[in-house]
Amino acid sequence: TSRLLKSRIKQIFVTTQIIVSMNTVYDYENYFPHGFVNFLDIFSYIVLEFSVAVGTECYIRNLSPFYVELLMSTAVPLVVIVILLLLPKLKFSLRKGAVSRANTAAAASATTAAAQRLYDNCFSAVVLIVYCLLPTSSKVIFDTFDCTSFSEGGLNPDDKQLRRLRSDLGVDCDKRSHQMWEIYAGVMILCWPVGMQLSLFLVLYRYRRELQGKVPVHESDDSERDSHQSIDAGNSHDE
Image 1 (cartoon, one colour):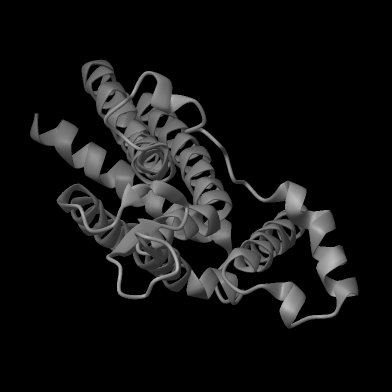
Image 2 (cartoon, one colour):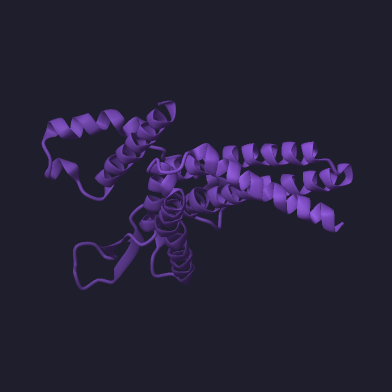
């Protein structure tokens, strides 16, 4: 029951973030009643939009605050996710060496169980990070391509047109540096809006039988744990 409640809370939280964030793309005030807009304003405080780039122009002069926010919203979470996914494998490898020296079945079983618990905790943290940051990270990524045009001289349409980034008017969209950041944002589209959702789908597909109730979760965990133990036993026997 508690696990189901947590899943429902995460779903409501992410859906609320998406609906509130879309107000910057589609002006809700022109399409929806004021009551609905005022209702969304109540939930605007829970949207995870961290202004981590505020003030960075004081000590990072050659990099726009928008680019700093783009890096902090995409690259930094990816590094954290990779560390969380590799941490159980690293710890299991270190403990495996100690178990091989001890050469006891009880030690091998305890090590495998501890590694499984650590993996479950790290994977839950990864899912939580993806759930919380996917809407805002995706928004910042797509903001990289959102440019608007201005007339250099004023109202005369024959004047030279300037293309500026809507999120940071100090960024010239025609410069080669911004075009390189657009390439980076294109790669991040494959990692975040596409890659993260595809990864979650593959995880759900892998455990589809457990989710449907055809196979109890603890039996699946026991079978994986037994396979790990058999592999460890085979390795110790070969040594």
